[in-house]
Length: 130
Image (cartoon, rainbow, N blue to C red; front, side, top):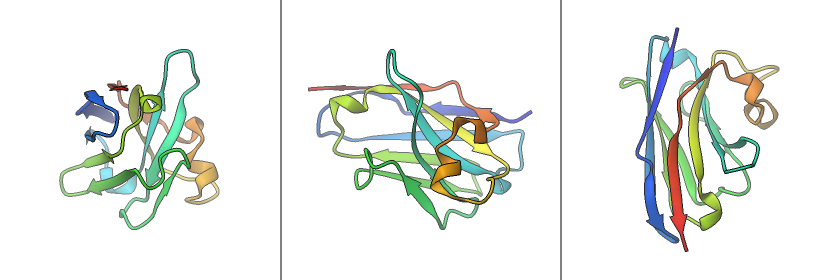
């Protein structure tokens, strides 16, 4: 059974930056598509972005495009989310997720569905103050 553990959350002022990391264990990491989701209080879980198995392709939600960057290191079994120009509306618990398959392919529509992902981390809190 694979395990994902997020780290790097915290509290910063609007306009600041944070870098989240997610460490994977118990799975053949380089075979997995990785994604970040977030969930604000009393809201549904929202897709943030995803990255292909080799890291060459990435997709982002419109709300974070140009501010957030996903990267992965298959040698270290990690995926990161660099968040710049943070806004109060970015406040949420951030989760990383792993999927062995993308149906029908590595597309935004597949990335954005929570049901695509079969392994989830426990989440890390990000709080942005105005």
